[in-house]
Image (cartoon, rainbow, N blue to C red; front, top):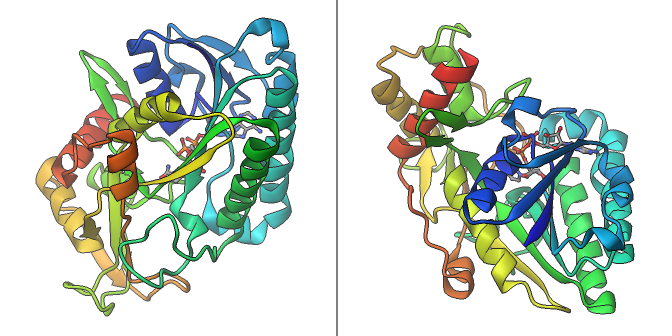
Length: 324
Ligand SMILES: NC(=O)c1ccc[n+]([C@@H]2O[C@H](COP(=O)([O-])OP(=O)(O)OC[C@H]3O[C@@H](n4cnc5c(N)ncnc54)[C@H](O)[C@@H]3O)[C@@H](O)[C@H]2O)c1
């Protein structure tokens, strides 16, 4: 298939582009590099440096794209609370312009990176796709809003659409000296922060709260290896059906506590990794764990690298080669 990958210079988009190319697809990456890296773009993809607002320049009816995989967007939940207007504009207004371009070019399929943040504080665990959607930050609200726009588009215009709701993404794509991984600035995700501490790039690591109702008192989150996540996009492309907006949670179904993450990071890196317990952060639920039963049943998706050792091991290989 001929595929347009928005955000293909970012973490998840660059790894997914690699897997799409490995599977024999033709990939055009569209990215404005606001948070992405030119060198992360898969070498055998065509790169177009452009904002998604102007996607219609590339998505012409003559270009013959079979699908758009839409990763581009801003992703920092904390920032979205202080600059909500930026997040509404970038994640909703510009994504709607992309959707207009998809319609005008008669692209039959759209795969969208949604997020666990659409659910907010869970009422029941594990979180299924039918759980209440009550985002606790603007970031989650913008992603949910675009999900709704896709639902109407699929219904009215027979788009074949799939939203994949990721939980915490980790790890890197590592093959024979070729590595792509996570690099966010500022870094807000626990595993890369732990690796920064292990590499001596930050003095210590903070764990927010150790009095939660979990086995060791620290928050429990569901981590998924980026390669497993990328693989789900290939399955979604095959499963997409005209007139349907399918939605799947992607997680391990197993949570890992913050303390477990730090222990495995110590094991993998061999570093002392100084960590301290800080006060709880407002709005942090004790446990967020996905039910991915629907993705397993309908897409045939099975995570291949479900352990923290695999995720942190690959992330460390990438970190030492490209970030440290
Ligand atoms: N990383 C996670 O843990 C996680 C979890 C859930 C959902 N997601 C979703 O996955 C997607 C990718 O996340 P990521 O971690 O790879 O983020 P990232 O910041 O590494 O990648 C985002 C990419 O989009 C590009 N971009 C942003 N705005 C753009 C615009 N207006 N026009 C063109 N390009 C633009 C950036 O330059 C960057 O390359 C996002 O939509 C995010 O909401 C990520």
